[in-house]
Amino acid sequence: MVVNRIVEQWPALKLFFSSHWIEDKLKASENIFHALLDHSVLNYYKFLQWILPKFVNLNKLFQSDKPVIWLVFSKMSVTYTDVLYSYMRRCNNPLSVDPNNSSYFLPLNQMYLGIDVMNMLQTLEVAKNHVMVQDILEHCRRFLIISIKEIRA
Image 1 (cartoon, rainbow, N blue to C red):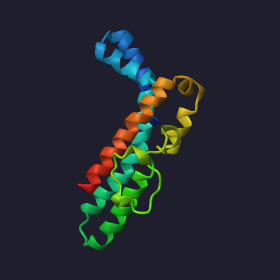
Image 2 (cartoon, rainbow, N blue to C red):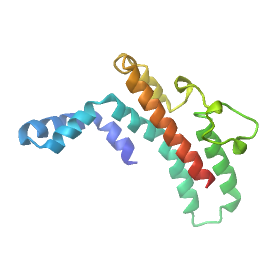
Image 3 (cartoon, one colour):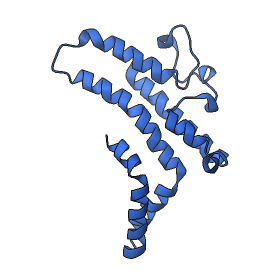
Protein backbone atom coordinates (compact mmCIF):
# COMPACT_ATOMS: atom_id res chain seq x y z
CA MET A 1 0.00 0.00 0.00
CA VAL A 2 1.22 3.50 -0.84
CA VAL A 3 0.86 4.80 2.72
CA ASN A 4 3.12 2.03 4.03
CA ARG A 5 5.78 2.93 1.47
CA ILE A 6 5.65 6.61 2.37
CA VAL A 7 5.98 5.86 6.10
CA GLU A 8 8.84 3.41 5.45
CA GLN A 9 10.66 5.97 3.33
CA TRP A 10 10.00 8.97 5.61
CA PRO A 11 13.67 9.59 6.59
CA ALA A 12 14.82 9.20 2.97
CA LEU A 13 12.07 11.55 1.78
CA LYS A 14 13.21 14.17 4.29
CA LEU A 15 16.76 13.96 2.97
CA PHE A 16 15.63 14.03 -0.65
CA PHE A 17 13.40 17.08 -0.26
CA SER A 18 15.92 18.83 1.96
CA SER A 19 18.56 18.64 -0.74
CA HIS A 20 16.12 19.57 -3.54
CA TRP A 21 14.79 22.52 -1.63
CA ILE A 22 18.29 23.84 -0.98
CA GLU A 23 19.77 23.05 -4.42
CA ASP A 24 16.85 23.81 -6.71
CA LYS A 25 15.22 26.54 -4.60
CA LEU A 26 11.78 25.14 -5.39
CA LYS A 27 8.90 26.32 -3.20
CA ALA A 28 7.10 22.98 -3.63
CA SER A 29 10.15 21.09 -2.34
CA GLU A 30 10.38 23.46 0.60
CA ASN A 31 6.69 22.94 1.45
CA ILE A 32 7.03 19.16 1.26
CA PHE A 33 10.20 19.24 3.35
CA HIS A 34 8.48 21.27 6.08
CA ALA A 35 5.50 18.90 6.00
CA LEU A 36 7.87 15.96 6.44
CA LEU A 37 9.28 17.65 9.56
CA ASP A 38 5.78 18.10 11.00
CA HIS A 39 5.03 15.31 13.50
CA SER A 40 1.29 15.69 12.95
CA VAL A 41 1.66 14.79 9.26
CA LEU A 42 3.51 11.59 10.13
CA ASN A 43 0.85 10.80 12.73
CA TYR A 44 -1.87 11.14 10.09
CA TYR A 45 0.01 8.79 7.80
CA LYS A 46 0.41 6.28 10.63
CA PHE A 47 -3.32 6.58 11.35
CA LEU A 48 -4.06 5.88 7.68
CA GLN A 49 -1.68 2.94 7.84
CA TRP A 50 -3.89 1.49 10.59
CA ILE A 51 -7.38 2.36 9.29
CA LEU A 52 -7.13 1.96 5.50
CA PRO A 53 -6.53 -1.82 5.47
CA LYS A 54 -9.93 -2.25 7.14
CA PHE A 55 -11.60 -0.58 4.16
CA VAL A 56 -9.31 -2.14 1.57
CA ASN A 57 -10.28 -5.59 2.84
CA LEU A 58 -13.98 -4.73 2.52
CA ASN A 59 -13.37 -3.39 -0.96
CA LYS A 60 -11.61 -6.61 -1.95
CA LEU A 61 -14.58 -8.56 -0.65
CA PHE A 62 -16.97 -6.56 -2.84
CA GLN A 63 -14.73 -7.09 -5.88
CA SER A 64 -14.55 -10.85 -5.42
CA ASP A 65 -15.16 -13.08 -8.43
CA LYS A 66 -16.87 -15.63 -6.20
CA PRO A 67 -20.24 -15.39 -4.47
CA VAL A 68 -19.54 -13.88 -1.06
CA ILE A 69 -22.91 -12.47 -0.05
CA TRP A 70 -22.98 -14.82 2.93
CA LEU A 71 -19.74 -13.23 4.17
CA VAL A 72 -20.49 -9.56 3.54
CA PHE A 73 -22.72 -8.92 6.56
CA SER A 74 -20.33 -10.43 9.09
CA LYS A 75 -17.28 -8.62 7.63
CA MET A 76 -19.18 -5.33 7.48
CA SER A 77 -20.36 -5.79 11.07
CA VAL A 78 -16.86 -6.53 12.33
CA THR A 79 -15.41 -3.52 10.52
CA TYR A 80 -18.26 -1.28 11.67
CA THR A 81 -17.93 -2.17 15.34
CA ASP A 82 -14.13 -2.09 15.18
CA VAL A 83 -14.15 1.46 13.80
CA LEU A 84 -17.04 2.60 16.01
CA TYR A 85 -15.49 1.34 19.23
CA SER A 86 -12.19 3.01 18.46
CA TYR A 87 -13.81 6.35 19.37
CA MET A 88 -17.06 5.41 21.20
CA ARG A 89 -17.93 3.62 24.40
CA ARG A 90 -19.22 0.09 23.97
CA CYS A 91 -22.99 -0.35 23.91
CA ASN A 92 -25.50 -3.18 23.54
CA ASN A 93 -26.59 -2.33 20.02
CA PRO A 94 -23.92 -0.43 18.07
CA LEU A 95 -26.22 -0.04 15.05
CA SER A 96 -28.72 1.96 17.10
CA VAL A 97 -26.19 4.61 18.17
CA ASP A 98 -25.85 7.84 16.23
CA PRO A 99 -22.14 8.09 15.26
CA ASN A 100 -22.31 11.84 16.04
CA ASN A 101 -23.72 11.35 19.54
CA SER A 102 -20.96 12.87 21.64
CA SER A 103 -22.42 11.43 24.84
CA TYR A 104 -21.02 8.07 23.67
CA PHE A 105 -17.62 9.44 22.66
CA LEU A 106 -14.58 8.22 24.50
CA PRO A 107 -12.35 10.98 25.84
CA LEU A 108 -9.86 11.90 23.12
CA ASN A 109 -6.95 10.41 25.03
CA GLN A 110 -8.76 7.05 25.29
CA MET A 111 -9.50 6.60 21.60
CA TYR A 112 -7.59 3.88 19.81
CA LEU A 113 -5.97 4.94 16.54
CA GLY A 114 -3.48 2.13 16.07
CA ILE A 115 -0.40 1.29 18.08
CA ASP A 116 1.97 3.44 15.98
CA VAL A 117 -0.12 6.58 16.51
CA MET A 118 -0.52 5.88 20.21
CA ASN A 119 3.24 5.40 20.60
CA MET A 120 4.06 8.54 18.62
CA LEU A 121 1.62 10.65 20.62
CA GLN A 122 3.49 9.62 23.77
CA THR A 123 6.94 10.63 22.52
CA LEU A 124 8.32 13.68 24.27
CA GLU A 125 8.53 15.91 21.19
CA VAL A 126 4.88 15.25 20.29
CA ALA A 127 3.33 14.98 23.77
CA LYS A 128 4.63 18.40 24.82
CA ASN A 129 2.61 20.06 22.05
CA HIS A 130 -0.87 19.64 23.55
CA VAL A 131 -2.57 21.67 20.84
CA MET A 132 -1.12 19.47 18.09
CA VAL A 133 -2.09 16.26 19.93
CA GLN A 134 -5.64 17.57 20.45
CA ASP A 135 -5.85 18.53 16.78
CA ILE A 136 -4.63 15.11 15.60
CA LEU A 137 -7.11 13.29 17.83
CA GLU A 138 -10.04 15.48 16.77
CA HIS A 139 -9.24 15.10 13.05
CA CYS A 140 -8.91 11.34 13.39
CA ARG A 141 -12.23 11.15 15.26
CA ARG A 142 -13.90 13.15 12.48
CA PHE A 143 -12.46 10.70 9.94
CA LEU A 144 -13.83 7.76 11.96
CA ILE A 145 -17.28 9.36 12.27
CA ILE A 146 -17.48 9.95 8.53
CA SER A 147 -16.31 6.38 7.91
CA ILE A 148 -19.07 5.01 10.12
CA LYS A 149 -21.67 7.17 8.38
CA GLU A 150 -20.49 5.93 4.98
CA ILE A 151 -20.65 2.30 6.08
CA ARG A 152 -24.21 2.87 7.30
CA ALA A 153 -25.29 4.65 4.11
